[in-house]
Length: 168
Image 1 (cartoon, one colour):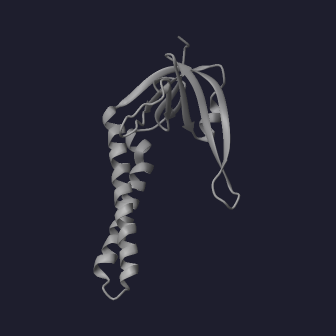
Image 2 (image 1 turned 90 degrees about the horizontal axis):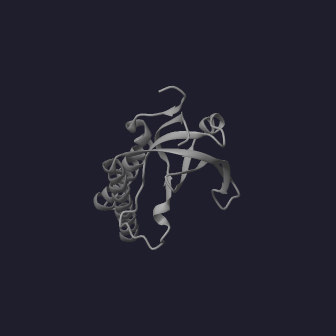
Image 3 (image 1 turned 90 degrees about the vertical axis):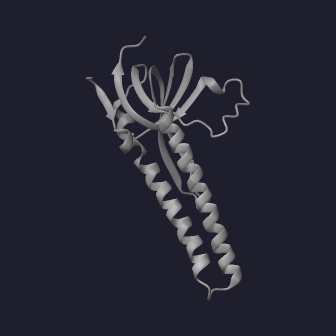
């Protein structure tokens, strides 16, 4: 287990998602509670607040189910070749601000992988080398695959281990 580049427990890897689910569900519950118990407000305002609360509760439930399926399916480990390190800048809002994300594009086992990583991890890996990556996949809820090549591409952002490995 030498040459470990990144390591995280599953709880740490999913902590951001868990926090987001709890926040969205809490916000939805507060909105729905305000719509029910604030009788002095105007009816239109209460209906809008209640509808927003219900929508947030539904979104939170979908996020929780998706995360549960990802955890339930378990982690997968692959030894893959790092083809390209990418720093991707994209528009975050209409005000012109940009967001930066760091990605590792890899190939292995006749599949293409894209892993979102931190800047520190991207700085520590080298193109042309092989790495063992342990990750949790995110599968669609309905699992509708219209593209015949969909099973050849794996995108994941929940990584628990990256370490150097010999190329197969």
